[in-house]
Length: 245
Image (tube, rainbow, N blue to C red; front, side, top):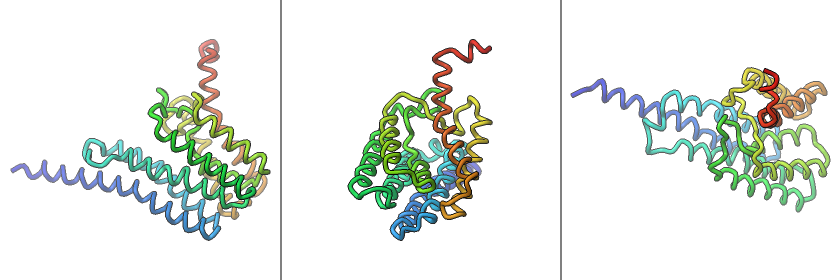
């Protein structure tokens, strides 16, 4: 009998199960965020979603590093990831928008309905990723959008306009950056992403009422992350980079 081979198989299976368990822990964090939202504790709500965002950022590289899909094909990591992502990126932020006191009940519920409906269609779109690993259309990162609503507390007109615009952009072939997997300008994008998390952490630590400079930094980094892939897409189509070379 070849015990080393059997042991290696068992080890890889256990590691793969561990990676899936790590991904699934995101739904437990979502449940804790839901409890915080029920208590209207928005600082705790976004803290739990922030931890879930960290889990989502780490589990993909882990799965690829340990070839989880090949070693444990009976569990779909992609399906598991979609379940967790829809709850943490879409459903709970929509719930927070509906109950956060931003607008009249019917307006807030309508906006939340738009978010969950358009995002469900987006999650089912097989064209979600472009060849350069950018997202095709707004990638339903409503956790970040609603977080900004809570920090800046804009007027209801701004909230309605931003929500409707992003819902429309969900279905348009406009690129949105994946901060890790898009190679073009990746060092700069990663630096901006880390800065965003730093500003967001300070905003959380100050109970969603950060100093003015932190708010400006959070807004500037958000605008960069929202627009950089579209700028790259436009530059490529117009041939600006080729002419520059």
